[in-house]
Image 1 (tube, each protein chain N blue to C red):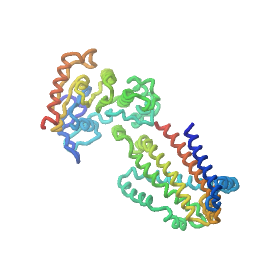
Image 2 (image 1 turned 135 degrees about the horizontal axis):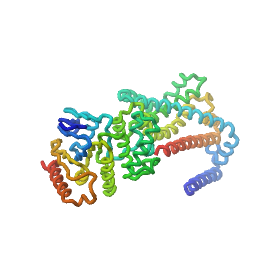
Image 3 (image 1 turned 90 degrees about the vertical axis):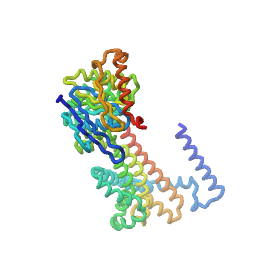
Image 4 (image 1 turned 30 degrees about the vertical axis):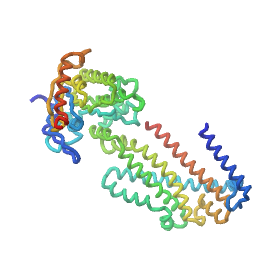
Length: 250
Length: 251
């Protein structure tokens, strides 16, 4: 119980201190609005924020799906051939260390300014690619060496080995990769939306920019709250999948 | 020449980072039980892998007349954690293309033969160490192998469980016609004398077979056999042979 109660109490306490400080010190609302103003903004802008959150959520989810297919697929292909792994890994690392902000304008040009959402999905997928690729590849090679020998001894085909040994052994690693990737996909989507700017997409990042330009700080913070809730929802969803699969595996 | 199911002839295995093993000379006759003892690094596991065809000698020959009729039990149970006992045991049959239903039926019979008939659906983590090793043994036996290779399979078990498993192994061996040949690697000389008809000592210094000793008596062992003078004598004899093959004799 205290695991739910304790953080809830802490949040309530912090909000109370914040509210009291804003009122007592007469902080201007454009600088730091009190929690009550943010709550009001959340209520007033609920329809527009919900629509935006849904769009960002959808883009992050699609990016995650793309990254899972591409990252997992590449890892699978590469795991079958050592030279292919040596060839691909540096490229994957290069992709990982290149800041998404830096390639965003380029991807935006390629996707076409009319399709900024595609650019956002592509960029978020690029950020989420590495943990999935790396997780699946590590997992595929993590099978017990004695089990590998057993498959040798009984003359298993490559397909049998992949389906019955390497993929099941890789799943926990893939899930770990998915968890990291889901956080990165949200970051990637927000950054990409920032860069595409000017309302090309109508996600939460755009709401943040839009409100910021108008100095409507309460609206900004309301959008930020939505973003946080969305991130938690995505991480909860992935956690749920992870628990289900893990229960099935062991 | 006597009948042979597997043989190493002048087999040498070279490693990039440590001393070579061999030349190893060892023949295994159909249906016999051979124990292989030796210090760590003497090449016990290598001997088994050569016999199984899992490793190729850098020099010399390793031949078996039982390709596809060989089974291996590793130091740890090596079960797939995501599959239940029955699926684990059915694996070798399914890999060989046996229809799934038949493979599962035969796996159930093999599990029953090692006393796990009631635990078909248990996952490896739900089995004790001894039970997991029994499942591993069932997986090796399910293909009715002619050559059974065991690499210190009971080393991690407590002594009571270990004795039970050795008795079971003897019974399973004696109960099959024709009997499978068993090559059993162990570092425990008492276990070697009790278990095997013949013990081979690997020399840690030369990496060769130092000597082979026949063990007395019949298998399965009669009750109380460990108290017999013949057994004690053989244990002491083997202990002396092993001490001579230890690396510190050159120190």
